[in-house]
Every structure is written in C-alpha cells, then in structure tokens.
Amino acid sequence: MSDIDLDGTARLIRSRIIETSHASGMPHLGSCLSLVDILVAAYFKVLRIDPAHPLDPNRDRFILSKGHGAPALYQILALRGFFNTAMLDNYGADGSLFGEHPCTPDLLPGIEAATGSLGHGLPIALGMALAGRIQKRAYRVMAVLGDGECNEGSVWEAAMVAAAQCLDRVMVIVDANGWQATDRSASITGGASLAAKFRAFGWDARDIDGHDSRALVALMSAPPSGRPVALIAHTVKGKGVSFMEDDNNWHYRSPPAQEVAAAQAELGVL
Amino acid sequence: MRNAFADEITKLGHEDQRIVLLSGDIGNRLFDTFKAAAPGRFINAGIAEANMMGMAAGLALSGLRPVVYTITPFATTRCLEQIKIDICYHRVPVIIVGTGSGLSYGELGPTHHSCEDIAILRAMPEMTVVCPADGVELRAALNAALAQDKPVYLRIGKKGEPDLHASLPDFQLGKMITMQGGADLCLIATGNMVASALETAKFLAERGLTARVESMPTVKPLDEARLGDLFARFPLIAVAEEHGPIGGLFGAIAEWGAGRPGTRLLRLSAPDAFPHFVGSQEWLREQAGLTPPQMARAIEDALVQTRLRKAP
Image 1: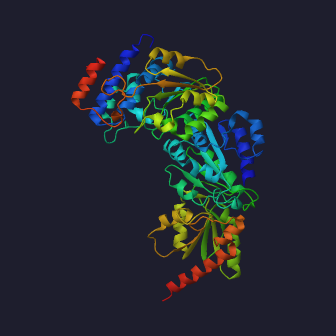
Image 2 (image 1 turned 45 degrees about the vertical axis):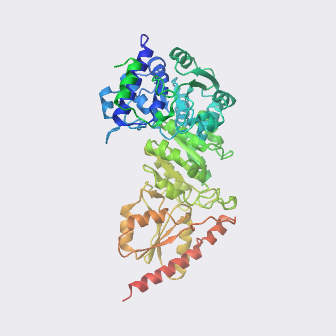
Image 3 (image 1 turned 30 degrees about the vertical axis):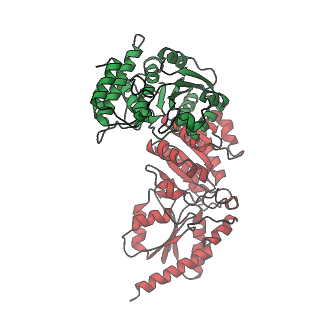
C-alpha cells in the first residue's frame, strides 16, 4: 500500500459514487463525497486489516457511524478487496445487501456495525475497545461521525465514558462538512468548536483539513497516548465536483447523465 | 432477587472470563465481590444508558458476554433504540437485567415503575423475555441466558422476595413450570406475581375451587405446547402480571390463543394509567386489584359467568 496514489484513488471512488447515485437515485451524495479522503487514508494507509481474513480478532475496527455514507464505504471496501466490485452493480436493488445504510456485519465482510440511526457508532466502538483491553489485544477502533450526528446526546455519553475509561485506542474522526440535512450545522448547534467540546470531555482533539490525505494519515497513525483522540476533519460537502461543492441540494439530489459526465470530466475519470 | 443476581453473576463471572458486567451507576456495594475478582470486567457506565447498551453490543460483537444491569425503566425504554438496533438487529448475546420491575419501586413514582416493558421488549425481533418468579428461577434463567447466543431481557424484582422453589426446577427458556395442580381453573402468572398467584389459589381453595398454578417465566418465546394443553383442559385461564393491560403476558397469550374456542381468558393486570399518588408496592397492587383476595374474587366471578354461559 506504500505506493498507492491516494489522490487518484479518491477521484476514482468519487466517480463511482456519482455513477451509483445516478443509476440508483440514491440520496446523500454530498455526504459521501465529503467523506472520501478520510476513507482512503484510513483504508489504504492506516488500518491494520486483511481482506483475506476479515474476522481476524486482532484487526483494527472501522465503524462508519454516519451510516448514510455507506455508498462511499462500499466502494472502498470493494477496492480494498473485501468483495468484488461487480457486486455493487446490485446497489439498492430489491433483495440487495447494499442499501443506503450498511447491513449487519455477519452478512458482508468488512462491515463492523450496522449504522444508520445516528449516534450509535461511537458507543459500539467503545465496547469493541473495551473488549480489546479485556482480551489483551492491541487493535484500534476508528469511528467516523458526521458533524450533524454530533447533535445526538449518545455521542456525548460516549465521549464522557471513553475519557473516563482512558480508551486511547478509540479514535473519532468527524467528517465536519458544515451541513446537516436541512441547514448549516452551526445554525443548529450554535457553532461552538467541536474540538473544544471533545477536549472539555478529556479527549485529545484537534482540527484538521479533511481533504489533506498526508495530514490525515499522519494524525491517524500517531500511537496511542493515554487519551481517546478526536480529529475534527473539516471537509466540503460534495467535494471534488465544482457544481456540487457546498450545495446542500446534493443531500437529496442524484445527478442526471450529463451531470455525471461533467463531474467525471472534472475528476479526470472517464 | 437482586442479591441472588449479584451472587450468581459473581459466581458465573469467576467461571466464564467472557462475562462483562455493566452497571448504570446503581447497585451500591452489590458487586464488590465481582469487582474484586474481575476488576477489568466490571464497568460502571454511569447514568448514560444509551451509551451503555451500545457498548454492550460492541463487547458482544467482539466475542464477550456483556450483562447490563440497571433499574428497569432505564434498562428498557430509556435506551430502546440501542436495544432494537445495536443488540437485536445485530443479533448479539447481550443480557439486559432490569431490576425493581413493575411496581417494585412504588414510592419512587411512575418515573421508576415499569408497566409497559414486557410489551415493548417482546416486540423486538430476536429478543427473549424472561421474568423470573424468585431467586431460584433467576439463577436458572441467568445460566440459561448465558448458554444461548441471543439477546435476553431478564425482568427481576428488588429484594426480599421469598423463594418459591425449594430446589432448582427443571428450567428451560421457553418452558412453563407447574407450581401446583388443580381442576377448576388455571392461573398463569409471571415474575413477581407468581407468589401472589399461589396465595390466590389458597383463597380459592377456601371457596372449594382448585386452581392449577403455572409459573411462566419466559414470556417470549411462549411455551405453545403447554398452552395448547391448558387451553384444551380448562374453561377459564386467568393471567396475572404486574404490568399494564396492553401487550404483556396476557397480550402474548391472547395473541396466541385468538380463535381458539372454549377457553375464557381473564386478565389480572395493572390499569392503563399512571398512578399519580405514590404508595408501597402492596398499596399500588391493591389499587390495581392485584392482591390475592381481589384476584380470587375476580376469578370466582369469571368462573360463575363462564359456567352460566355454558349452561343450556
């Protein structure tokens, strides 16, 4: 994985997500596009995982707590070799495992938790990290949350307990694209710093450019240091396509064919 | 019952290194022995039940056997979505123990009562719902719950309940336990109403009526074989539970028995209302018509009506 072209991989995944949205009419396109660089850094550079042994008890765990980013997760799991990319042609079809939110982990290799209702992923991540401590395994657990998701009280219950239990093998990455379904996050939450909130709960938290792959890899790979870690990854909803960026209509819209072509031309993927 | 739980889980936690006990900041000193023996496997998860249930799911997804313990409303309705999604949808073996169920905490008021939890928890796919009648059934149920690979809800009382079984009955999840034989009617009770059911049978005996009394610890799945036998044999089946009238044990039996001719079902439950005046568990039961003399009278009336209806 050392010679992987992170930027090119991210552009390929963005293109595939846009194709899927066009073909299936799936929503949450903007939320998927903001997430891609975080996923690429995690899956190609950081997580200690082996697609040939998806249930290895010592593997690192990745939980997409913002489950509506599932179309992006499926693409990266396929590209990483957990299952055949052709399976994704089935996305959203009647009887498909590939829905708008991840299925239960017993049904699809690489999936660690069935998310979709927000605020569930971090508590599950804490349980997995506690299990690692009890079983004396050194794996780490990464949970990606949306900034909108941080409206949920259960996120802050978990933030309290993770710090109290010194779960330094838990890492939260907030895909902070600044939007939620119907409004700017700041207008709903008051806009106070998420990093400051996590720090107040006892976390090691910092702000980062969520599209800077090298910075993401460096911070995600830092060794545990006694406290849980939160990276507030500032991203752009709809990242990578000029006419989708920071336009919240793409929380629900899917692109017609000519917009797919325009997007792919911008991404340099045809 | 909670002392029996603490004792049994301490014993089991010693034998089975997979057991992790999570408490929602209750059980002061109750788990000191467990904590001393397995400090890494006791987690005080704080007054944060949604997170506690999610953590339990994460532990179970990693091969451990979490047992979650707090006061019943906070172990059930407070964090229902985590139970539904994180535990039931994921089909993971988490044991949820609700203590002080029904009207046990009478004086604490409806915030601490639970008269809808059986209905709500049994509506969750994959969930097994068990209401042990005493410490003996509780210990057996806990062992049985740990032996299966599915979510289980254990609805237990508080403390000081008498043991009804002299020794461990032949306990299986999904099976009823016959407490005494009788010919005139059958009285089925669950959890902390089994003791009252036995008392009720004594009042009925004074009136010349013999009641078969069944303890039904497992509300889901139902013991359909036994129910079929009882429906075939008795003209009146009375169902007693410290729970509201909707969706509890009575509801489960009525759903199953709908359309079966010949047997009348009598519901002995708390009302579909919050008690706005506090009182002891005994006083609240009296208000609900759930004391043994009240239940005996209701059963006698129902029996008379049943016989009148059958008369030519």
